[in-house]
Image (cartoon, rainbow, N blue to C red; front, top):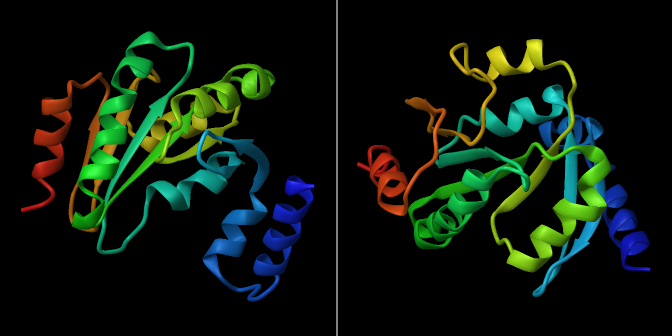
Length: 179
């Protein structure tokens, strides 16, 4: 019943203004419901065309986008650091997006339980696009495709990191954007 109610609300909201960017992005996503320890959330699943607007915003925020997967040990190790940044810097106009590269067949068995178990508060989206030759260089021309990988950007500056972080390293990189 929760899933039906959420989908009904999503449809009503999406029908309000057919010309909005949000609606155009929503057309490229499918949504699945995930119940965490504290709330029911929607797991949005995007291809590159749908993800592109989420990783290229031109607003007054600093965006931290982390590409990760539940099967990637360095990714899992650093996720708490992104959660800390999300909570600690929210009032500084920082927005964290966790882009899962888990395989679609593992959404129910691994990704959703992981989100619930770790009670992730940052926005999590699943990325499902098999055309790696298109989207890897589009995200960053020097990216080999290895994860973890992170983008930190605002409307004036964009940095890409193909590496894992400690808490201090992540915060130091973020602080370059908060000056």
